[in-house]
Image (cartoon, rainbow, N blue to C red; front, side, top):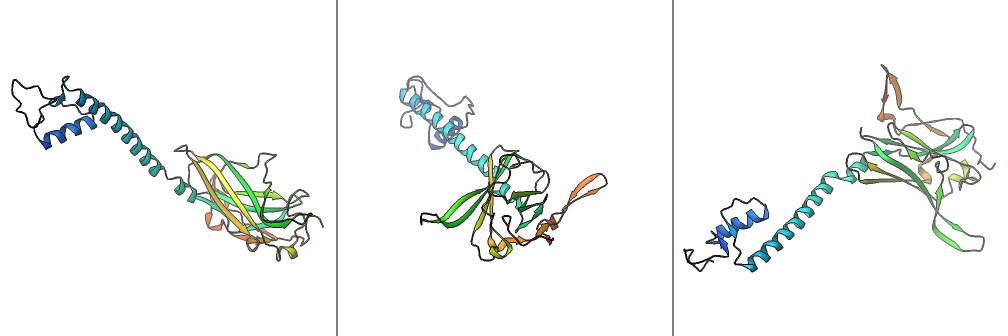
Length: 250
């Protein structure tokens, strides 16, 4: 078309395309589906029709890819995970006349986490009765799986409780033995972001140095003028309470 004169006797493949700027404008009209009607492909050019179909399909794929990338970038589930708080330390004290391991979680945003669930893993090396050494052995800590307490409704800061009973790996743990233990408690909080519907996961961990024996978390909620107020400045604060230094087994 560029080497032929657009006269009355010549039928071009693409009408009204004379040079590079006009061909570029035709490309933009095809890609953006503008369709001004001045430049168009004629039926005498099968190569142009095939190229037009290929460009339309490729343009749809590229548009869908870019829109998906922008949606994922704007949703930013990692930023949502940063608004989920965990207490700096875990505590061991009595609750309902039972020795419990507790830590606190909170949500800094007004939007809720749908189907929020929390899990705890104890990572500790151990040796089996057969003499096999298992480095970094993982053990599940029960935080209410049987009762449904692991399903959280994070409208306010919650204290997650693990009851130290005969089935707990801390059944023989006392205040004295805590100083010589080496372990790590990994906490995993998963949920669906209400605004985007994407899965979000937040994690933290507590070593033996971050577990306080005989402590309890300070209250952070107070009733003011008929509304509950949450003071996040006291979120990590603890205070000592009378707790027997013996293990649950003792």
